[in-house]
Amino acid sequence: MSLQISSKVDKNKVFLVWQSELRGRLDSASYSVKNIFTGSLFPLQRLKTHFIINPQQKEKTVPFDTYAFIPMENVSEEDASIAKIGTIQGSDSRGYTTFLERDLICAKITPCMENGKMAIVKDLPSQIGFGSTEFHVFREKTHKVSVEFLRSLFLLRSFRDYAKCNFTGSAGQQRVPTEFFDKLEIPIPPPKIQSKIVTQIDAAYEAKKKKESEAQQLLDSIESYLLSELGIRPPKQEENSLVNRMFTRHFREMSGGRLDPFYYKNTFEEAKKSLEKGRYPLMLLKDLASLIESGSRPSGGVATLTDGVLSFGGEHINNQCEIEVKTPKYIPYDFHKANLSTETKENDVLLVKDGATTGKIGIVENQEHVGQNINEHVFLLRFAHSMNPYYFLNLATTHLYQILIQRVIAGATVMGLTKDIVKAFQIPLPPIDKQNEIADNISGIRNQVRTLQEQAKEEVEQAKKEVEVMILRDSQ
Figure (cartoon, helix red, strand yellow):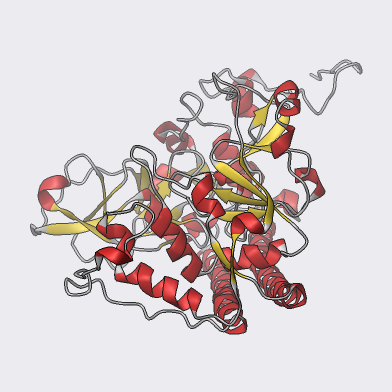
């Protein structure tokens, strides 16, 4: 029996599903991507045949005062590993997910699951461990399929796209249910093929880690180069001991109406002295910028808007000081026209003014980000010809300058930077030719970093594609 779709219908937006293929759900999204493993070169078997899914910990264990604890944020989506194992008191462990050595823990909630947050538990300091309730746990049962191989399958983007189509829950709280894994069938290659796949994925992640380490070394070199060019010697980092936290200040040293001890900490004083001892004069930011202004959004919010003018916030500035819009936020066109003073132009600098990422900074480079706007949590800085915006950007991202920014954060309920505080930033000002030289050299370093990071990601993605070829007929 054959079915045909009218030629007037966009075939890219319509698909047919046989009744026999229904899995207890009627929403179209759950059938928009088929299980990639149905095209496997190897026999399929139920996942639960070889793994205990979300096992209940009933085994007797030696009691510990503290146990290993792994929150969701400690699982790295960059290399599918555990970045850090914390601890939790035995009396506080009730209600958390439990796991043992060599269990595979995998995020069930979006977007963590989509981004590949999963890891094999290793080196537990206690007999059992605890973690986020948003982890699924998989434990080897037959030992015919290793957790390393299962992790390799789960890391495939095509599999995670399929899992995403089976999310349940309301928007913003969606997760992959246990029922999805209960019914999931996976390919079972011979042990040698499993081992080859695991080795290939692990080698790609190791290569990625090496390149990212090289990239980080380059990033770390930026500050020492920049401060050296400015004749600034960074202050020594002091241990956070009781002795170092105790200090005295003369009343005549107090300024700006600040009487709180935090403002006068030794760390801040040393950073300020280092800046003042540089070879170039210090200028106030208000004398170098042609515009320092924060943005706004309509009262009542714009959460439901899916079109309009982009409204940039701190979440749209990545760790490379670039504007990156993964989750766009919009304001109406009319509202934008009424607030053209903060319309973005090329080389505008965006500075986060409050919240958890206060002091984070980025620059408008791409034409697609020009002509947009900013929200109330961001300052837009535009500079006159005497200041290279890239020079300021790199200066403001140094550890030294971030210390000085942290010093002047103020507020009661919401801590942040005011316009007057930003205007009073002290900037060492070399001649414009020297600024350009510094900015160009650092741009070269950042380009090398970007190349290494892109190569690292490409190697991992290529390894995953090769794994799909080894498993799936459609990839041959």
